[in-house]
Length: 206
Ligand code: GAR
Image 1 (cartoon, rainbow, N blue to C red):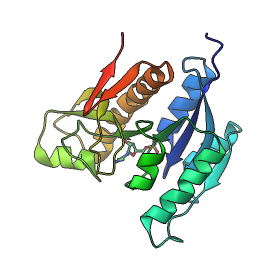
Image 2 (image 1 turned 180 degrees about the horizontal axis):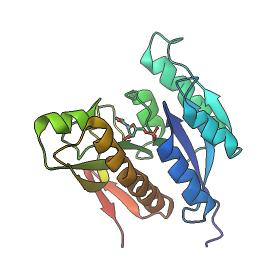
Image 3 (image 1 turned 45 degrees about the vertical axis):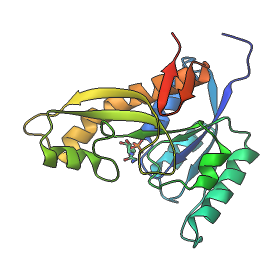
Image 4 (image 1 turned 90 degrees about the vertical axis):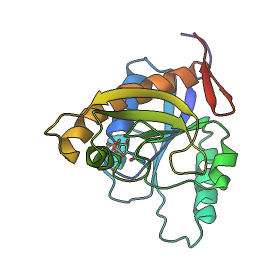
């Protein structure tokens, strides 16, 4: 391993945090040369907070209902992330669209995981959207975040088959297994300095 300081990752969550757990596990095993500097949740009861605390990671509950403007909420999120000297921001089941305040504060350094093969099925209930459409394959996408809904440059995608008797729950569970691998792989590429962004294209060095 290089003598370089570990990449400091700030993770934004809203829910269960299985993706957060997968990232923590790969950092602890030495696979990813990084440190989770803080976990920020917009929900006080997110189980992701318990997972973070178990690993001694600082947690911040930053609820959005106190803010009438999305920009103001994001400005405070930026201040928290900067106070932890974060290099990379990960949206791991964070169910909010970011404003230019967040996106401009971390250019090409905010990643999101989405449970579909973008640009198909952006937004909420992507797995149910895929089932309703009748696709044979769906999957997950890791992309850089811009101010649109799941529209930023795509870093990695993994294809997952859709079975005839799938429900939203069974398809979500199959996609989530792929998410954990794909998100970790994309984070590792970033941490190892192997990603460049050219317009909409993400170039990965060998
Ligand atoms: C994941 O399936 C992720 O793809 C999805 O939320 C889930 C969070 O699970 N994110 C989105 O739908 C964002 N558009 P987790 O809390 O167990 O990691």
